[in-house]
View (tube, helix red, strand yellow):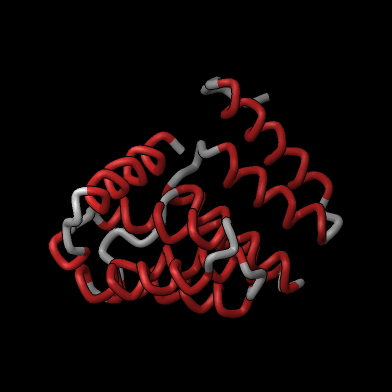
Length: 168
């Protein structure tokens, strides 16, 4: 949130100084924050414009996670899944822990719990102690009425949230 406010502040200053937008260069992370902020505010045309600029500047593979998040915001679960899958295949550093958790959520929203469970396992192989990812994995098991696995993951999620390293 602070980074997004900082980017907005800088952009506002540059615009007030009549700096042409073609001369403003932002990092991929800053462009991603900006696109997502516009989408959350309902300005989808501007979010799409910023994403197109980021894609032109950094390449399509670099913007796949942002495009997946934009699809999640519009509740287009199949499109989000497609972008997350492409990010895993095409990017050198595909997903953050929250990206994996959102990928699992997208599968949960489609009702494909088996694939959601598989994605959760892949994400947990990379980030075994991420509380949000553990929670999403637990939700997948709860949806399948796999109580023992869900309780184990919930306990790990709580411990991870508290910063503990040992699980009960």
